[in-house]
Image (cartoon, rainbow, N blue to C red):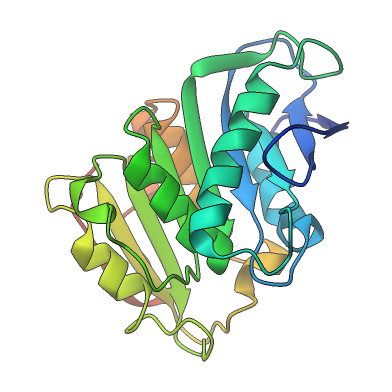
Length: 235
């Protein structure tokens, strides 16, 4: 965990299934990140890795989808709806703590595919992370300028990197800040436990591109736990 203690509050809004907002207790203005679970999953599956991100100085909302069977394109729209709802909050622990000019998205599995699609349709976003992302559609990714990190596992039979993450990485323009890391031995469920190096890569990616903090660039060069690592860095 990072240096910030965090509070939680429940949020309801239009266009997504509700969620939980994690916000630092310390006064300040923080970037806002919406995180989406995968097919048939709920926000509990992404709570650990999202809460950890908040402890490093972010406002993070984990969402439930309108329907657990929603496809990536729908999840993309729901991530954006969650950002609109959360950034409008004026009550609870998060009130007054958001820098609405710095927003990002993340997600696991179909939620990761949704994060990728949300980035492709929303140039104003500052960063995105897909954990074991799954999508059969990446039509809008070829024009995306939003910095995007794709994290996958060598033991993932649901969203194998060769079929999903690598395809998405290659479709993302070479002029866009991007990264792909395939974690040795990780299966499809690796994001559920805020496992490394997935968690530290998300923290470093968001600190670098949402906060503009180049001190975190050193953590975006890969390490021995990645079986495959590529990027358009150094960042």
